[in-house]
Length: 382
Image 1 (cartoon, rainbow, N blue to C red):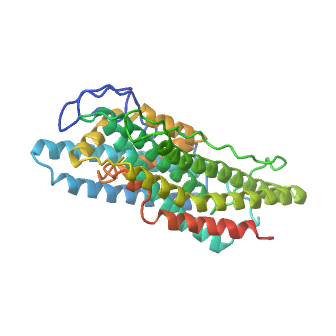
Image 2 (tube, rainbow, N blue to C red):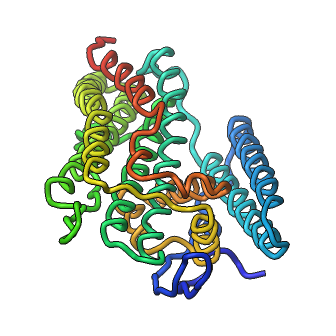
Image 3 (cartoon, helix red, strand yellow):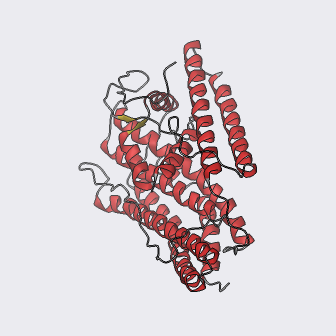
């Protein structure tokens, strides 16, 4: 059987609304890479791996049940083959994360807990919610983007719409992962240096002549992307500051520990303020797009063929470039890719409508929970 995502492919199909077109694809990486050698501290890593396996099994079962509804038999068999390939990729991603988990050094004992238990609970619960919703936004944007490229009537504005929406999703995935990392306080020995925000460069949505996607409308989407990228940069600087404070504490360097905690509280206050603006910015952009008639949805048939294209060929290069821009290292980029793979088990994420999916129910509340915990931390003195 052909290995999933191997090589660079070209789409050349004409069925159910998908017409012949050429798109450059980039192979999935999570099926190929082994990053970290084995090491001790197994229990938590095994728990996380088994939970990941259970999630893949659940999604695979739901995918198989959906296939049984497909007619004729050839369509059902193709769907089942795709579910099998997704299952293999999902398990491979679980194994990759497990290897990374086992490769992390154990934390030194008796170091301070920088966030309170209540704050960590908020990061865990809200971070998980933002991660899940971000994956839905990412997949919906990817579906719209690809449909805009190879649909029966390719539309440039649809491609930009999909690109903007998937970037919102990727940004949400990244800062959700950062919030989940705050539950732990690993050591960074580079505690003598201040961490500075390094935001990713989001795609720029351009106006499309002859359409309602003019400069004013494009700007409303770009503001969302810029705000979110700024949050990602600040969150990463906050994470480094916390970890460097732990390094200073372990090295018994109280002055540097205090310096890093001041930096962390400063960044937490900035992030809390910007995260609090996210929902309003997304809502403004979605309303502006909707009022101009910039509305699009992928059909069931298109979603199935888009999923087949992705499974067979990998990720379109433009989407790959967004992942590269937002992931600060190989592991983060593979994590984003793995989250996207998990969203492909069902076609509903790929057919999420634009622009409604930019403001999914629950995302704002989860973000506000993270923001409130960060604000409380920013004013703490412990």
